[in-house]
Amino acid sequence: MASSTRDIKRKIRSVNSTMQITKAFELVSTAKLKRARDRMDITKPYFDTIQEAVQDILGADKSIKSQYVSNGESSKPLYIVVTSDRGLCGGYNINAIKKSIENVTNKADAKFIAVGKKANDILRQHGYNVVDSFLYISEKPEFTHATQVAKAAMSLFKTGEVDAIHFVYTRFVSTISQMATDLLLLPIERPALSEEARGSEFVNYEPSAEEVLKYIIPKYVESTIYGGLIEASACEQAARRIAMENASDNAEEIIEELTLSFNQARQAAITQEISEIVGGAEALK
Amino acid sequence: MGNKFKLEIVTPDKVFFSGETDMVIMRTTEGDIGILYDHEPLVAPLRIGSLRIKQEDGSFKWAAGSTGFLTVNEDQVTVVVDSAEWVEEIDIDRALEAKKRAETRIAEGVEKGVDFIRARAALERAINRIKLYEIRK
Image (cartoon, rainbow over all chains, first blue to last red; front, side, top):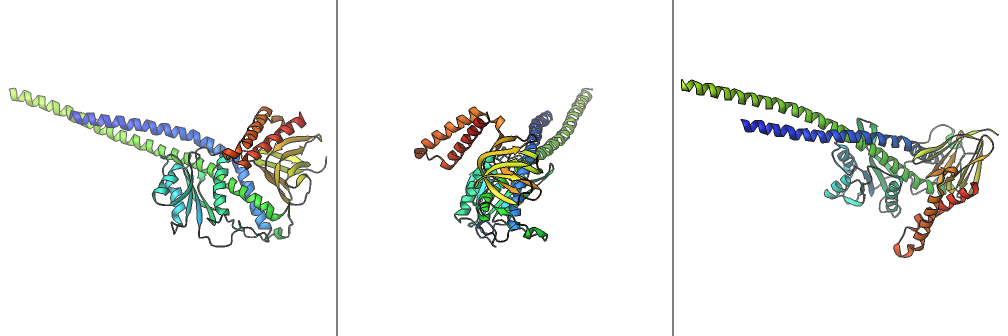
């Protein structure tokens, strides 16, 4: 019996130290989440402005022809998958990866650019064609990182190795809810023309609409990737915070249970000792 | 002071400027362009150069801008640039250093396979900063 109380005690200690770690992680990600959200708020206007401008240009002018504008089906998609470098963040990584391979029918045709170690490892393990990977940038994405990713993707698109670029990242809905999303970066879907007088409004393009698009679309890709990276980094922290919070709660529960059985075991040991003593005294009579 | 319009300048890391003015001058790929109230709708890419915003007292507030583009529509002018800074905030030592670095990188680029386009853009940005700093000193 004595050994069992010692075992339980050891278990409690071990769970306790795990809980300390998860608690610390939780605090760290709470702080990081705040910072990531601040950054997200800062970059939002830029992100939105470019999005709007591209939609406006394509919406206003029907005559624009460009390799970047959608013309039907694609057979050689490229997926840019954004995940974290580290685990312990619940379903965050696996949801993004699942989302990316959800529509892949033919493994041989689809190419992947992995952002974050998790996507890189898991996709390679399952035999997907990872053409490029960017590690250790997903926690603190900078604009230059986005430029690099965009460059890699655009060069594949330009050479015709891929004919569509999907950007899979996790959208920040709220601190307790994140959603993996698949965004079609290129070719751009032409927005449905609004019924208002937009068609008649004359917009001047300097030097020409095609030239402007040629310039703006890479910008659009860059900024969308940048916005996505920032958003995903906020999601990572949010997901980790929740996962760690749950882990801490569970640890507490386990400790409670273990303490109960520890007390029971101790009580049982005492009771046994007493009955042994009583039994011994009785035998001496 | 003429009629005013709304001007917004955004960079990836902040809203650089948001307010009203009656004239803004910047450098597009086709040359300098000045925009007044009620300009026709326009979209144009921007080059590395200066951004000048007219202030209340009629003087211009100068800023160094990087590449980007501008859109003019009925109610406002939006400028999207990779980076922008007020001339007063230019760190001249840093700009000089960046210039030197870019120059050496271009000079030794042949053997080392340096990314020329990037080095040249960096050089251009540094020169732009230095030039504007000198003008406004």
